[in-house]
Amino acid sequence: MQVIIILIEILILFAIVMLHVAYATYFERKIIGHMQVRLGPMRVGWHGLLQPIADGIKSFFKEDVVPEQADVFTFRAAPIICLVAMMTSLAVLPFAKGWVLADINIGLLFIFAMSSLSSYGVILAGWASNSKFTFLGGLRSMAQVISYEIAMGLSLVGVMMMSGTLNLTKIVEAQGASFSGMYVFPQIIAFFVFCVAMLAETNRVPFDLPEAETELVSGYCTEYSGMRYAIFFMAEYIGMMVMASIGTICFLGGWSGPFEVALFPPFWFVAKVYVFMFFFIWIRATLPRYRYDQLMEVGWKLLIPLALGNIVLTGFIKAFTG
Amino acid sequence: MQIQYKPKRNLLQTIFHVEIMQGMALTLKKLFSKPITRQYPDERPEIELGFRGQHALVRDEITGESKCVACMRCVTVCPSRCIYIRFHKDEDSGARVVDSYDIEALRCVYCGFCEEVCPVNALALTEIYEYAAYDRESIFFDQEKLLGNWDRFVEMKGKAMDNYVNPFWRPRGIPEGRLTAAKRLDVPDEWTVEGQVVGSQANVND
Image (cartoon, rainbow over all chains, first blue to last red; front, side, top):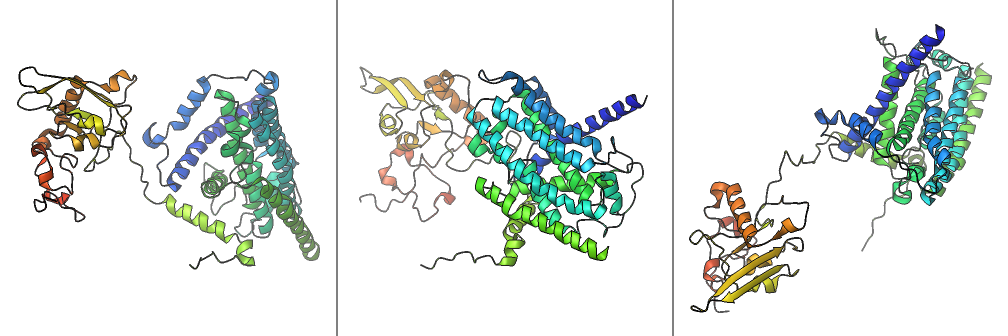
């Protein structure tokens, strides 16, 4: 019985997240369009509202091309690895009090593990396609994820020290329900480091070197088409959502808000996640891409020392104020 | 010349990423501005004076045929050489008779020289711009198609065609005496802009 309930819950979560992913693409195209004084999708449905569904149907029925020289098994598996790893992190996210599939004690570590696992999908895709563009994209992704994973992990150490736990539900509860309890104020440096590392982890502009269109055609997913390409796309958006959720949980107080919303407890959580998503899109509409050596410089010479300094500072404050 | 460089950032500006914030403020401001997109098939662009679109041979109201006299000026002036005319001389009158008049519109660069140079205003670049096709043959205009294009243009414009004239039929800045009789057309007053004289008879003999 327990298993069936969990399966149903997983199914519901999957459906809702997929819907959110579809409409996140619409949200992004609309916002970027208006920021560039265009309209964005307008044709399918009222103001293009059915565009994501049309895109989904289109990519589902397109031909799935496998290059002749590709390593077929790895080529086929790579997008699935990417998507599964991203989807798995959803299991430990608390959307509201008690609204979590697996309330495990190492939630934060689990998400780190899964988000670095998903970069295996990217690297394998780059390798298996047997093309120079995808290979370069895969290499860049590997280097980028390794450098920024450290900065991101270290930035969240401050949060762990303040809350004294890795359980995401308990991190939210430790912040209390008040506005001033949010960790974004005491951990402002960590929040900055997290925001930058989050962009790099999800391969978003200005750190989208693995898929830099101007240099690498489409980077690691150049050789993919149809549904497999769409799976990479979904993985990217789920990754954005997961990162936005971690930001919300660790710095913005999760589901707690100024007042309780009856019937729909995760209201504030969803609202905060969408603020983060807007931030992602806003950045994309504004900034150009970093050069590769600048990317490494920001990661190693700026973010990691900042995060380490933040840990020391938090430690001192915690030791003296108790 | 004094070159104004952007002042160097100071430490505070570097730490708080002031330039990135300026950029973000700009994109946020533009988010709420009115988009300039025109929803094309629903909203059509307004056609300006001097628009050069699909080619047409003017159908003479009296004879119902083309006005072309086979002087070959358009063929000579055409920079992309996309006009082809065949003619023979009528044995009795000695006048030229057009056998075929073809325009290869895919090679045309729409410069409008042909209609400007035409002494009898037989040719026009109309305001029709939607004539894409799936094969090259349908964009190779022979005399019949060109006359048909004119009929379609007349139908599209309706009443406005009664005294139709375009800026190439009556080129600006050329004294009236230098123009052929057919080109001495009455033009609206607003065409005499930018100090260009339209229809001056003063210096015919320069």
